[in-house]
Amino acid sequence: MARFGGRIATDLRDVTTDPAALDSSGFWAVVADFEGRILCARFGTVRPARPHRPVPGRWHGPDRTAWTSSMDEAAYVDGVHRIRERIAEGAVYQANLCRVLSAPLPDPAAADIDELTAVLARGNPAPHAGTVRLPAHGVEVATASPELFLRRTGSTVLSGPIKGTGRTPADLLDKDRAENVMIVDLVRNDLGRVCATGTVTVPRLCAVEPHPGLVHLVSTVRGELRPGAGWAQLFAATFPPGSVTGAPKSSALRIIEELETAPRGPYCGGVGWVDADRGEGELAVGIRTFWIDRAATEGPVLCFGTGAGITWGSEPKREWDETELKAARLLAVASGASEYGDLGTGTGDQAMERIQR
Image (cartoon, rainbow, N blue to C red; front, side, top):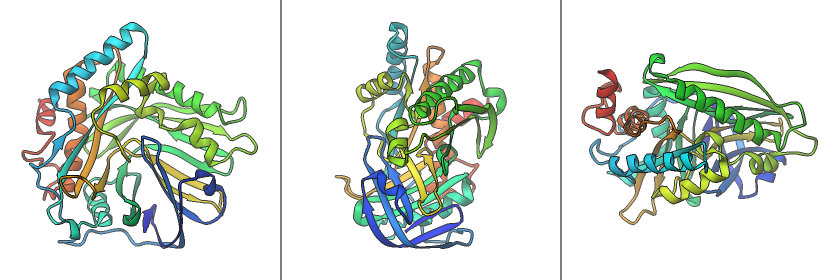
């Protein structure tokens, strides 16, 4: 099943790894891993869904102290220093550095990823929230993403890159605005590869958007697809999303591969839906996203990614704190915090306390 935007899709009909299928017919759910694996699932039944409310006892999240990170603070801070060295050398202007958190599921048989989506909708509502549950294909994803990767209506395409994060607007720095403009240029270039000449514009630049527990700087990039260009061409031109890679994208991807110690999977990929019959679709950047890995060597685990964009102006400790801030509320919600603002002793507390001070 899949759940997006007040709709629930059931009756699985077809699964493919070819994004060209998204221009055929039917309603599709899409999950694209950061590493390039894409799964498109066509469903036979799509119906309006009532607000998704959590059922007490249906989601058994990990213990709040059980989360471990693919990079500890020392390794992450060292990675920031190494990216700044690459910037000084002229190899890159900005690169995202991310880490993957994981925790064992206490009752894997009772872990329904769609119930986690309901819990997130209550504790961390998001404009691009959704579920894709395809356990036979190794895909169980719940997203509370605030970021638009691609929205297509006919030939019109929008992207909404986020760069710049703070607990309040006062936390946003000149570095955040410069980083946002840099990534907007990258997204303009990506869309320009598949859109008609002269149609790529920026209707909104560096708008401050509030989200649960933090604020973001968000821009909007718009373009008109060239005749004959479809979803396959859009993916080829824009994936992975520019806001979670860096600039230039090719150089940033090489640095990411060198420094990061775990694959990102659905985190920083694309998650969403396409209605091929209507010529519409919406894919979120896979941030604020959980997924279940039932094939993990230590047993089924719940995973979550967090990261930050690194520029020459980055202060390494502050960047680590930003990754903690982004993770803190979501981990508390997924682990069953009774009050989502009270993060107890879980990951992210130190960051939240420092920012509050």
